[in-house]
Length: 453
Image 1: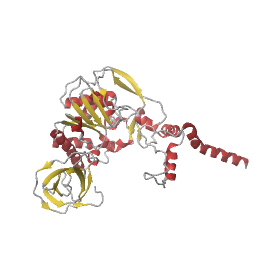
Image 2: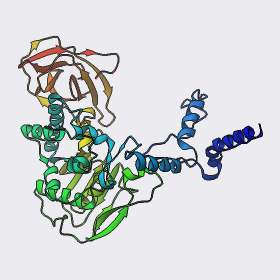
Image 3: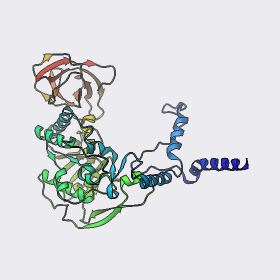
Image 4: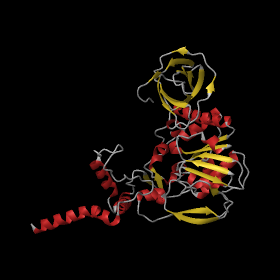
């Protein structure tokens, strides 16, 4: 009996360690890109007692207990050593110590490919952005940051077969060429160098990779300048990779990277905290032109190199892309950089821009199953956002037109059977026009009581 009591006491003591540790060490902090729950509140947003308090508290304790990250690190090291696989679902354990981002696996294996219609819609969304830029006197350029395993698939585990055929990035590049959208290919130059330009334990390119990307963008825009890649002096820098930090939250191993020793002349004109900021503004006395760049985390290493070349630059991580920034920033150049794994954002998160006017077309009445909702647009006073859907099968290359108030507008197609458009107030009620079976058909869209699409 005494032995049983001692065992029970030991078991209870071990169970209490994480909770008691909160008082000593405080709650566990997030690692890498991890998002942990905030402390539960006694009241909700309306000041009433929080009915979900106990559930919120349970979630908070489950993710925030003391020494959680140390225990996670120990568990992951044991599992990777014994089973040679990563227990963290967002990390793939590759060869020779390489790590890959789990969200890129579908692209690598050729799964989840966008349909021909979705690819055309993504290209059309960029074509409409380019048209808007041209109307405001700005040059437009789109580029794709390759997934790490698209370039270094030989470091992926053998149990994951690499897909064959044309992936989303290649299909989109071809559709962009068909629609005349300016596109800078980064896949080819990054492959052709023969150098390793992505970090082994991080999901992003090295500073040299960013330098090569900056050179490619400069050339595509017809700008002069001293190349970054291969010509600048460098100094070695070591940092913990984002994938390594996700897998081993308290680990201390570091990736080698480089810094360019070239003297930088740009300054931050916004309140700069880190390269992760949603909005970064810079100025450079030796630069020329004004840049607006919509970017993601690959722009962290890229933005200083571009900031050095422009008299003024604005780097935005906010989606959907707000093209109203072209005028407010006085931009004469607009670059959109998007990582390969997120190409669906082009249809899932359509850019904010007024729908352009188009010539009317003769269309036969048809049952298209058209419906829409309408909401005010906070970024664009005087406009409303129309979000629509239809059940008819549109041709792969059919634009989506809206006839409203005697004017025809082109909506941004957002995939199979969906569209959105920024229309002047009072013009939300519309007739939908599209091509199906090679001919124009039309139906007056019904205002839906609930969101569509």
